[in-house]
Image (cartoon, rainbow, N blue to C red; front, side):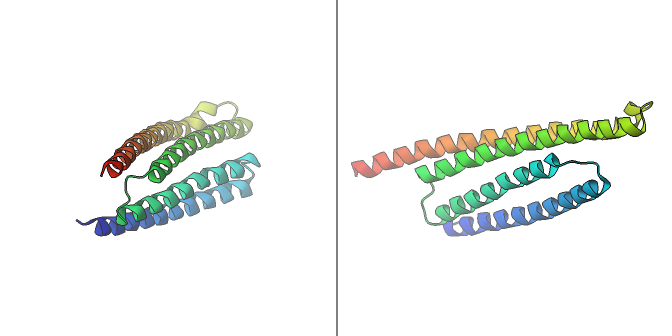
Length: 171
């Protein structure tokens, strides 16, 4: 596969991932809207949700530019290394914000259930708590994996850019 074809394929993947992300964000936003109408959440939850939606936008933007540079035969540049570093930081920020949002939701749900079912709190919270723990582990694992992979690629891209600059100077 040639570099231009690879670049186009990677950009198509970014667009598809962006569309899936928009569908998920729309679904999650509707759930949030229903929760706000019910009065279960306060002001901080929508603020955290908006903060959680920003890092993926930066990731899609930087990935699009990296894949465009691949098509132009400028794969190993310091700019791409910075973009990968920014992707790593956005993945870390998104992971932390999602975990904070999850913990906040569980605590608020616990307080909400305690108000209406004080005798049987753990029975009422059982399924919610189990799903929250599973989601916490899944988000933490995937988020940290993406963070470490992007940071390693950033480091390797910077080293390759330095080697390429050194070789360009010697010729």
